[in-house]
Image 1 (cartoon, protein in one colour):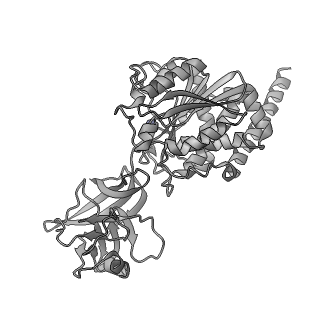
Image 2 (cartoon, helix red, strand yellow):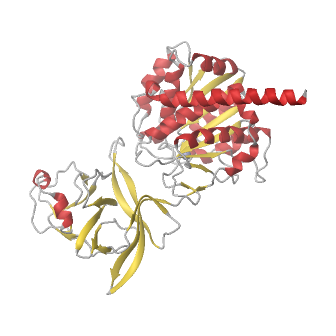
Image 3 (cartoon, protein in one colour):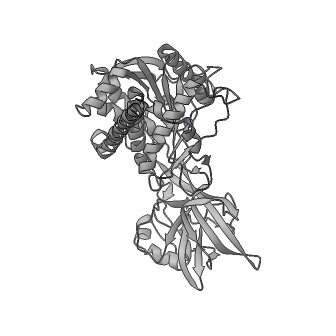
Length: 488
Ligand SMILES: [Zn+2]
């Protein structure tokens, strides 16, 4: 009897996991059909969501209710679907500059609004009611910043509840008494999975609800769902998952919502090589969140061993955009060996719809415990200051007519331009543009400075580093270069 039962159970669980795997793969492969194409970059605004939310208001499948208002008066909407007993509550973008999951939520709506995936959707909606609160901090999103209009971090307002956004989150959580909560954020792209060069494309946390970090059934269920999602992400971004430190933060929403009895899952969207606007990571959100909801509906996640959670590597923050290793750096008549770590910092344009890069050296020295999205082993290469091109260039169109690569090969990293267009905040050319009277400061490799130099091997200049972008002067391969600086 016992043997039979075990065998039956094995068959059943095999069947379930095969079915589950199929759903995930199908979701991934058909993603483009459901992608909400009006949202396609990180700097999205409430204004972009509004017509979509209004569309669902008129749709019988969805229930849309206004549940609050931001400080600047933007409506906060809760969009619900399903009739099931298990309440699943998902909220995104309580930090205004963390939009990846907001986009994925509208992809999920498109799937539920389609005639496809009928069986799985029926199973989800019969067992669960899903409640989404996208873009909890629309005032922050308007100016692409973390904090709300009051200048506070909503995620430290769970107890004091001064922000109307935080009050709304608490009120909705309490009114639903949600069984599961998905707390959806973005993290820095510089996080990696501990002791590997892999970015933490997704990081998870089942937040603690006390200083002792106890694990009750609710928190345990959150951990199991995280293990389930981790397995999915591993399929598409192997090794690129991190687990957050679970120190208890008594002011944070995740920790408190866990404490209030909702199994809470924090998802942080991080970085992925070449995915500046995080559209691949958005897709991974879509696939993994939908699959997780399905496993909640079918209760498959309950089979997962809790210990698996601790096996997910911890989050670390040891990535640079560009790392140059073992370069020779001459200083005051002596040569030194340096690693240099550089990051490209985003500077928003006035309307916060777009940005340009102003890069910085973040660290230098022995950086052997750090990694780069892009790494150059510069053993035998000498860091050499860039020069100012001696001819005065009249305009941007005259500059465009020059062979900039050959200027770089000759060691020029600055061009003096007479008429720099007012509207240009940065140089679209892979060379810095300077005004008629600008004086380039003495060259130094120093933390905080803009990384700009050339690399020499023997007498040949082989690479240029311009505003933190590495340009291989002996290759015609397209680079990730976006902009150099203008110094007027
Ligand atoms: Zn956040």
